[in-house]
View (cartoon, rainbow, N blue to C red):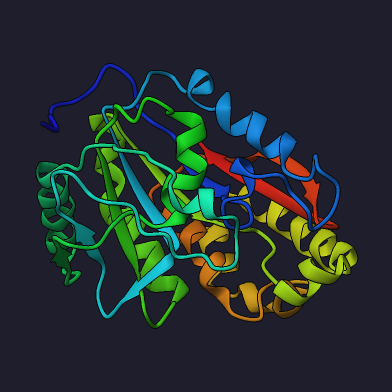
Length: 273
């Protein structure tokens, strides 16, 4: 059961790249076999870099959009294998993390306090933006996990507001994770041609996250003006989880927690706090 009392340590907020489908659990054939090794190593070591093991995880994945922010409420959420064309064994992965109806209720209460409508879903499973990376970080699947959807309009200001509303969770031992990809142009990834665009966008992103909160949020709202922005994100669903993490960061300055190259593209993870 999730305990909303203050925790001993304040959690950071994170924006992580979740890789390509079930990439960490198969022999990679769309490029060098070690394409995802560096990211996998970072994910495995992530918990050790936190101030404490989280009481619970709240994950905002690029792979769930709803009319209003929606939380999973199942006590034992299934997995949603929302990827296609991968080896059969990748559809048999397990990660039986418990859900937390109590955390889901706390999320809704905080959103309500900020006049942000929300909803629940007691049937939806955790999608691959959740279980694929976090199975590496928490292989024992012992930490209660709730997933929060994006708003279907993908409005960056609205998602920053969602993050600001959820900031108190950090003091309650909840690790808020935005799961996406800092570069997500599938044509560029599959052809290996995303190097220049991803590098330019990553440089902009790295500079923005280090700014004060007000300037950071203004720049993130206007992300389309960034160098190679639309070439890096033809559709922005893999970027928008960053907005929630940044909104929840408050005055904490961001920094690149991971930077690597996969499928020819520069990919970064961001940590606030």
